[in-house]
Length: 336
Image (cartoon, rainbow, N blue to C red; front, top):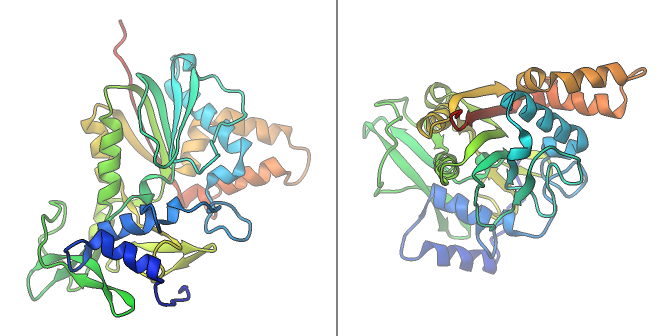
């Protein structure tokens, strides 16, 4: 689907020019950063409801399923940490929507609940369960395209040409990620999730906190990104529709791309997290919140009550169960 594409308004143009400074174009990640987080026009800076199923929102997440989602997260933390006392850990949620928190208003076993919203400083307690839902895929990403003529990868950027934002070649590229193959088919486009890798490294390297890191998001293996997605994975979301022209109307819609699970797991291993694991949301919840799921089945009377309907959305492969994945790992202090 394509958004209506009126000319950028003067406020957007001036904001872009300010961000551009003396450059002829913004590298793709700088454009995404500007479109999503600029204080003046950024999509996530605007005071509006983005997440939900009602009219006026753009997408929904597992968070919209409310209490059940929260209970399954608590049950999963209990299973993963086994003999550890959850009362010794703070539950830290990163990138919650304004005035929202996954465990808000719910009885919980944790030492405290800490919610980090946009623009809040990120400080992780010494013992923590750090949780996020569709945070990493909201980070900036770079775009590269392979030129068979030049026999190299070239970095792409965004320029304002006339009254439209256009994708152009950045002639001076600082560096090409070492993961990129030496050659590819001509025109192969790679949306490289550089911002997610930097953000995860920042969180995991924030002091030497111990505990659990758990995030739910969309991603692919590195080999798939590098060899099987020739048109890239970037997309936008607007009024619950995926849009193809992600340069149209910056600040008015979400922009995202698939994460690279291999790089994120390598980051976790590098920072001392044991057995970094990626699972579908369905597999993760069935493995780690099985007792709570069994209670839901046991307590139903007949048919599909609201709790069963919510569970179906969370774990059924046709809904969030398969497309959404869980990345998790633990970094626990050695026993005395």
